[in-house]
Length: 385
Image (cartoon, rainbow, N blue to C red; front, top):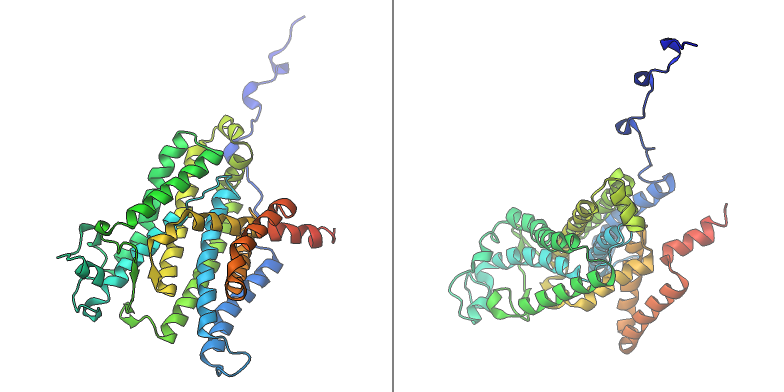
């Protein structure tokens, strides 16, 4: 029996799926309820806070003091760090205990510019900063070359932490260091950098660091108007960073990061290179921390090597854990909750603050493993289903 050629299926006519033509469903950046909360936060931080501080009389119950404004601004800088750590810990599964290094590098980059702006207004009436005159320096060291230009210093705020993070991450990720070993190495690197910055010969102010700033872009930095402008700027940067981070985790890049967190070996078998993804998000996270440090030094008016203390980096991780990992809004809530409690307890009962911080972390670890946001979602959103 003969079989006609027409009855044989033609392989060329069989359509195969094209991977490039597969479209992933588009996820909304924020839900309608989340957009309402976002706009409410924008209104409070950028409108109501300035009005209550600048326009409402100080004897009114609705007046917000300069101290309260400065405290909120400082916590917003911390919240920006927590957001950066959530990108690498919550969504990529990499726990860093050394992000205080990148925070401080960004602060020092901006602090160098602010020190140059003091000029002849220092105690010694010398173009050199007071600590250099005291140590008998005759000229600025080489690494201060670009510090007299605002935009060059602003570029260094991103480049310096990003470059250090790239060099460290490149060798660490290529060596496939993971888990607790990676966390210990990040902590050791931060501690080593802190010891380096404590030395006077580095030209970074030694123990005292940088302080006594006078101007920024020609404006007096201590005036109420300048501080309020910096407050609003910090608010806008924090809210914009939240949207950018949300866009990242909702993208294909973000889905690969979460796949690396959950099963890195399977990601490799699918043809992706985890090192590239981890290194990219690691550098982005470091640059966000550098920006937070630059805003911090503008708000607080001082930066010194103690900000690189490993305890500070551990505390950043606590903010993320308390608020809730892999939620973006959770770390922001955690930063405000922990630092707000710290500010209150250091006044009411300063001797028990460290015990309170440890207790908060233990309670969250044992009873709220998903943090405040995870508890809220389970208790209220789960009850509505």
